[in-house]
Image (cartoon, rainbow, N blue to C red; front, side, top):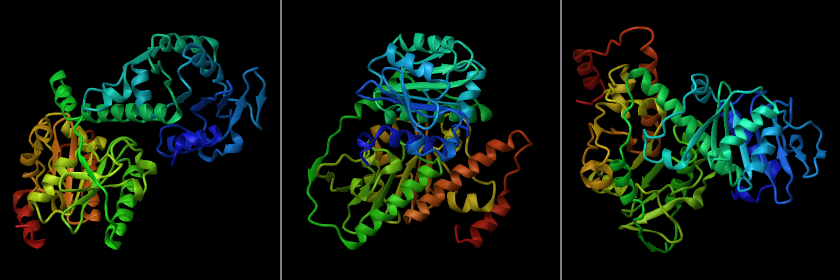
Length: 429
């Protein structure tokens, strides 16, 4: 989908559908706007259910102040207008009240974006605006004053967040990423103290960002590869809908019969990815005209070393990642399903997947189908796309249960004898 070619009303409708659908605003809360080339502001209406918004509901506020549409514009139009006047480089604004970010706003804190490698770069500098009455000129001035400092992301005291961007998707991407950081930090603080990345860690990431592959032109696509591409897209979009992926993070790959594999592309919105966007990698070369995920080398190493693995997922869902960004150990001995699918879950060093992906790949034996990487990701392997997806889902749900249990009592893991019974019954020994 070429999002930028959609009419402003369609862009706003699609993005509000995502924001509301993923529980990041309420029926009456939040508003989105776009400043078009004519100087007109397209904005969500006042008093209309965000869960059933259509393109006909979007209001156009003309440059001369006149209004076109069947509804009144959002009551918070004043601060949207002030943001655009203050920052002519911004063409879209996202404002919403996701619970995790509201939690930070009511304790007057900004989420830390230094727990994982890409979030700081995506979110940039974040400011805080003083509290003022919603819809008031004072609130607009408070927000605009922070934007005037060159900051694109502004937390509002006891309110929510406002983000500006060159287009609506770029603003949404920051919004979604910062909300993810907030949720991760809350989960991590529930079980321990988050460990933050150092500048040395960021240097390690940067050193691996510009690696370019040679390319090749596929001679064709077998029926099996076409079917695998279709299945991969189904699971990628399902992973996004399950909030196991975000729009910018999450990688899936699948082995092909000829020794190559197909993998998600770098930098593409997971929500609207389709079969033609997937990238075939073969003998260290990438399909012509496409850029594979930067983790392609790790996927390749896993396939080369482990014939039993046919699918690999790399993801960053907040509950299991709470164990990756703290010193806590994730223990799968909670319920039988968790142990059967996950077994032991080692934690690899942050630098291992960058500096020595071959050694990191060696960890994924038949008894170790999943591993955490410190302050980075969870890596899941499987015998099929469904098997890998199931393991990731179980890992996230198990981690969520463990974190939730902290407020109701002490965890009682399954003891060694019962573990041996599970291993014997399910052929794991």
